[in-house]
Length: 419
Image (cartoon, rainbow, N blue to C red; front, side, top):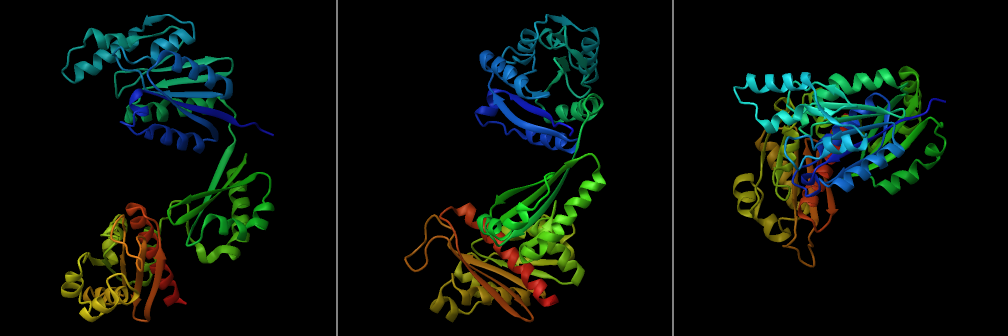
């Protein structure tokens, strides 16, 4: 059996630990390595401190075949990656004429003078292979030792990506015998992780050894990731599809899509296929549902518009909710969201009207209507469907959960009309 080729991603820089910069590099690198069959076993972040960096080098070498580093390659004294790599590999820093010429050309092209500080970037560990970086001034450095490979890259995302795509990935594929890793993501909504796990436990237990299942929960959704490892892409894809066919009868009503699908993209497809239009009336979600809908290219084909009548005055005067309903039932009620969904559908000449009203928090709750209470409704020519949600005390979480639940109610309503 072919062994896994493993990698560690090492991010260097105090700014990452302080939270001043988000480490998007590691996420992107992980995706690229997964795509060629390299298993990332660890991602480590260390600050600009000699002892910590050297310890991270040693730890990486003890567990991974490939060590990919980003950051710490600038020309200033706080950038320690290069001198510490020289120390770790017991190598002197030497001037690399090719690197100096490239850096000089980079500055000349931009009409800038090469300073003595920037000139230091052309000094590299003698035991490394110089890797030209045409989109920046910090060269890449490639090392090989004891069957392991190391690559040091700038932390600037576009520079790192250039080196990964044009040098690192091809080099790794040339050196290592790589397996194929095939993923299939099944997207579910409206069911919690533990309930889902109970429903599919027998199916999960019967999976073949080369296919693994992972549960990836997020707000209002659970993704099921099937990962197959082997030597032939077609065979792996076929094996995974057979397992999906066995799974769907168990959970089909909760499955809304696969892989890159989102609720918003799937709803767009459903509306387009049926030549239907949508309108929104959002109160507690404050336009967030409209944001998700319009984030999909081409949404103007099926989205007619939205109203955010946050205050009761505008629920009544702009949207047309009856004063009687607001006085007797309140803004956060089933009766109100039914009228909101119906009125917005009529005003915008849409086939579906979707509405939300609730107490997002952290204040505003009462004993009868606590923080986190939300009503949603979806109106169509066939009727109006509603849901009562009892969510959290976190405002943004409640807004996101409301949007997910509302979009799922819309999805279910569209499918019911088809049935």
